[in-house]
Length: 463
Image (cartoon, rainbow, N blue to C red):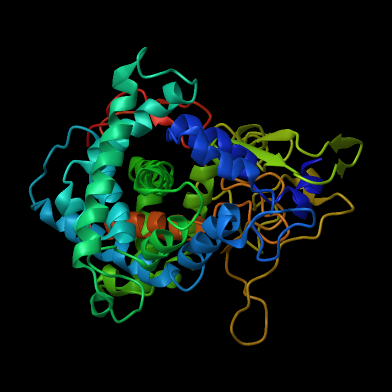
């Protein structure tokens, strides 16, 4: 059934999920949530037939158009470069010497260094300068989400709601300052960044979302909290898990380090093209395997206007369907374990590597590859008109079983628009630490999760 779901454009709007998240996670009042509930026009430039929403109130389309341009369109490169510069500077500020320095917790280190860099690349340096504790409160909000999701009111659990309100207040304070200071000449030469609003995405949201019915600074601040949380909530833990697995296995560490050095030599990594990082096969396989192993989340699908037929099943219009990534990611009938040598519940860095000389390689189990409808992976071009004989990274054939970012429906609007930025952030973070720093992990890792994304940690991981 999942292969049918991916092909249904009628299911491409995640607005049904947003309603719950906006109300309970971010605390939007009903008069704002009602605007989203009334928007049945869909995420596409052309509204669904039967929709009756004013163009300026098409919040589904307005929101996703901004995300697509900023996070997978023209804004992707400058945003990634800002992250690379910010992370490099923050790690250097730690002044790690040639002597071993013990750090109490790998997770806290990533939340601070990588989390702050991600927030800065979207919201700019001014927001964090005005609110130096914002990232700390953001992670406090992240820890509160499992309880907010249960709808606990503030009078029962005031400490659960406190980090969220702190973030909202700080964002509104930043709005006031940025409006006073910003002018067009402050936009950077790349046409995207600026020191006050941070990015074209933020300026776009200020312009478009404040024009939507019932929206004000408080509503926008709650939605911008959602953007900040969406940026860091899964990306930072996944980057941390990738680094953990790389440094925990000395042979893997050496292989990744050799690949990075072979690709970039001693060039300063903050100055390389971000796209080149995606061409390092083993690093990409580590990334994909970490997401397969650790992302255990639900995705909601709904069709506002028509029933959707899914093989033997039917999803009635207006009803909600749930897809669980964790079940698919742990399907031992689909994933290649190399005859049980690498069980699906374990981390295998080479799971997504295909070696043309090794018929047992690749992410998909042999009996699945032998089925009649198996199309086979696309071979890599050797640059001379032929097919490369080198091992390569591939997700081909995993489309219905590997979906840590959601589903790539027709039009691509239900899949996470930040997936390209997230991948580049994770790959760069790994490459920087692998090539330029020595890290020794002192303990094993235990995870827990509320099935909202990447599993959190039960205890500190010193290094």
